[in-house]
Image 1 (cartoon, protein in one colour):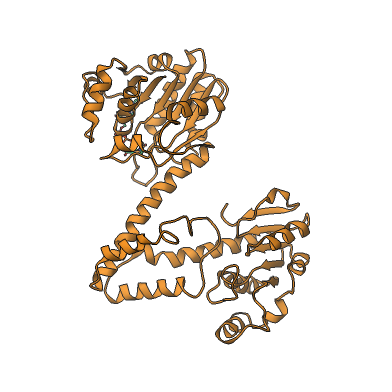
Image 2 (cartoon, protein in one colour):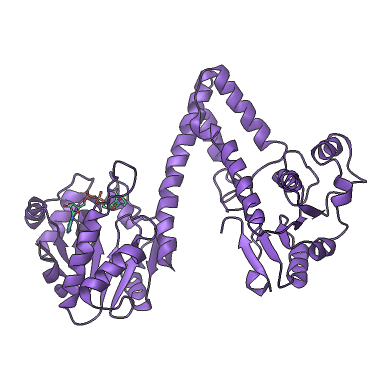
Amino acid sequence: MNISIFGLGYVGAVSLACLARDGHQVVGVDIDQTKLDLIASGKPPIVEEGIQETMATAVNSGRVTVTTNCTEAISATQMSFVCVGTPSRKNGDQDLGAIERLSAEIGEGLKQKSGFHTVVIRSTVRPGTVMKTIEPLIEKHSGKRSGEEFGLCFQPEFLREGSSIRDYDNPPMTIVGCNNETSARLLEDLFGQLPCKFISTDIGTAECLKYACNAFHALKITFANEIGRVTQSLDVDSRKVMELVCEDRQLNISTAYLRPGFAFGGSCLPKDLRALLHVARENDVELPMLAGMLPSNETHIRHTLDMVLAQNTRSVGMIGLSFKSGTDDLRESPLLTMAESLIGKGMQLRIYDPEVNLARLMGANKRYLEESIPHIAELMCASSAEVMAHGDVIIVGLGGQEILDEVKNRARENQYVIDLVGMKDVEQLPCGYSGVCW
Ligand SMILES: NC(=O)c1ccc[n+]([C@@H]2O[C@H](COP(=O)([O-])OP(=O)(O)OC[C@H]3O[C@@H](n4cnc5c(N)ncnc54)[C@H](O)[C@@H]3O)[C@@H](O)[C@H]2O)c1
C-alpha cells in the first residue's frame, strides 16, 4: 500500500520503519526538518531497541520518502496515519492544537485529491474528538463528506516505549473504529496478518478503549505498589504476596469482576478492605487508591438512587435484595442500602428476592435486616409478578433467566426498568430502560 504518516515521534517513526520493512511505500511527514533529514539518511529520530537497523533497512529499500508538504503526501498515498503528539495542558485537559491544525491541512490536501482516501488517527485523543473535532475540520477544509468521499478511523496504538518494534509486531489486539467498510477492509489487509485478534468496532468505543486500557495499567501498578507499601510495613515480602496474587487465574488475573454493573458488597469485601486500611493507618502508611474504593462504591449506589429519583414517581419495585444472586446473605448488601434510601425518600417500595425468605432467615442475617428496615415484612412480595404489578420503576438487581423473562413478559409501556445485572434482549422491552452504567 501507499501510506503517509503524519508525526514522526515514537509512534510515527516506528510505524514508518515497520510498514516500509513489510514492503509498503511510506511517505513520512513532520514539521520538524531535523527529524526528516535524519530519516532520509536512514537514521531514526528516536532511541528504541532495534530501530537503528529497521530504519536503515527500510530507507535503503527505497520505499521511504519524507516531506513537510501535507498535500503532496496525501495525493501520493491512499491512506494516512496521524501520529502527532497530544500532550497535557496545565489543567489536565489534552492539548489538541497539533491535531486540529493537521486536520485542517489534511482537509486542504483532500480537496485537491480525486478518489477515496482513508485517514486513520493513531494519536491518543479524548473520547469524542474524532467525530466532534477532527471530522468537522476535515469536512470543512476538503468540502467532502466523511464516510463517503473519505474514510475516517481511529486505531489505538498499544506500543510501549523501549519495546516498540516488538510490540508493533505482537500487539495484544488490533482494534479499529471506522465510519465505513472500505477503510475497515484496508486496515484488515494491512494488519490482519498480525498474531492477534483483529476487531472492527465504532469510533467512540475505540477511543474510550485506549483510555480504559491506560487507566487499567496505571491502576494495576498503583495497586501493586500500595499492597507493596502496606506489606512492607508488616515485614512481609510484597513480591511473594503479589506473585501469589498472580497465581490465581480464576478470580485475580482473569475477566472476573471486570464487567460494569452494580456496587460491590457482602460480608467480605467491604469488611476486609476497611481492616486493611486500618492496619495501614496504624503503620502510618497512606493508601489513597485503596482508600478511595469504598467512597467510589458509595458513589455508585447514589448514582443508581439518582436514576430512580429522576423518574419522578413514588412506586418502586425491586427485584433482588441480597448482595448477589444465589445467596440470602444481606450483610452490607448495596441493594439493601438502596432499599433503605428509597424508603427514606418516601417511596412506596415492594421487594422480591427468591432467596430471601423472612420465615427462613435466622440469626445475624435476620437481625441485620430488621435493624436496617424495621417493617420489611410489609414490603416483601411473594413473586416478581407482584413487584412488576406494583412499580412504575423496576430495579432489576438479580440475574437468572426466569426472573429476566418475567420482567420482559410483564413490563408495561408506562414502566421504567433500571438494569443492574446486564439483561439480554432489552430491545424487546415495551417500556423505558437504562443500564446502571451503560
Ligand atoms: N509514545 C508512546 O509510547 C505512545 C504509545 C501509544 C500512543 N501514543 C500516542 O501517540 C501520539 C504520538 O505520541 P509520540 O510519543 O509518538 O509523540 P512525539 O511527541 O514523540 O511525536 C509527535 C510528532 O508530531 C510532530 N508534529 C506535530 N505537529 C505536526 C503536524 N502538523 N504535521 C506533522 N507532524 C507534526 C512533531 O514534530 C513530533 O515529531 C500521542 O497522542 C500519544 O499519546 C504514544
